[in-house]
Length: 381
Ligand SMILES: Cc1ncc(COP(=O)(O)O)c(C=O)c1O
Image 1 (cartoon, helix red, strand yellow):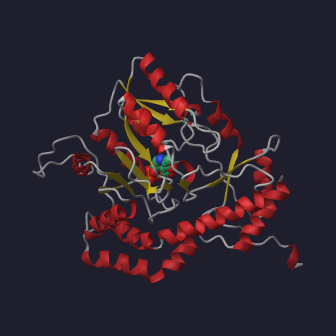
Image 2: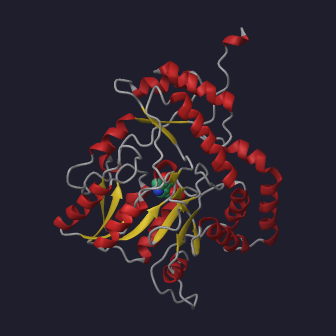
Image 3: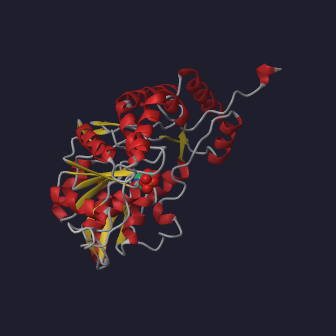
């Protein structure tokens, strides 16, 4: 009888195994914070910032409350507002464009590249022209490093500097990845990342960080994250936020950062096994030449004619969860559909939203479980 029972469901992201591996080190880190009671801006925050700077090569790191705040704070520090246009890929998580709209500026959505799912440079150029035609002033671009790998930093950076735009890299999903041998966090004016628990480097709540080589920007960001405070605590010099990273989360991240490189290597082994097991039946992710990925998601494209809902249901019946990132690109969503899109439209984003589906991906996916996932995928096709 038992042999007919489906084995227990596979976790989509396994936070529990990582928690077990880290065991006492996390408990002790949290206990230290509980002992010194500096829950806001405790010593762990500065220590984490220094460790993150050393990890990615950025000169300044400013911890903050989330990846969304990280993006928002840079735009606030740069004074982005009404009449300004910020170019964003449409095939991304909503926070990328949301922060632009929050400030009264206009997100102009551009298309992505069919192979990497990251910003298409030609569409980016068209988006700048579209913005100008609409009477907007293009001031910035937010290239997103989607699903774990970098956007084309050189090509985007070249267009941005020729057109007078600053680059705010959205590495919420890709901190730890490299582009031409350099870790993300050292490209553009600033980079934002997220420590949401499901991210490759995640904490046990919300958290984020900003990376920059610009000392003045870093100083402004430190003011923005505490209500825009100046040197006199009660004379706020700009409009700001409560956007600090909790000491407790910083303490947890210090411990997690110690095993991050090892986890990135494990994620890459998982990705390699998927590519071997699935590469001949469907479109597996493509990592661009000169890039490495941290595999925030393992996102496949289904062959023509395969019904995505049916495919997901067949996998679910085998105890294999899937997720769709993103069933609607930003320009297709209710809150964003009135914002402009680059001339020529966004056909690739729309196609990807119809065809992609993500498989379980984490550093603790063992070979047996993965073989089960691969067999389920092949069986469902
Ligand atoms: C591409 C991208 N940008 C920004 C964010 C926002 O990060 P957070 O959830 O920490 O606010 C996310 C989070 O999912 C993301 O995937």
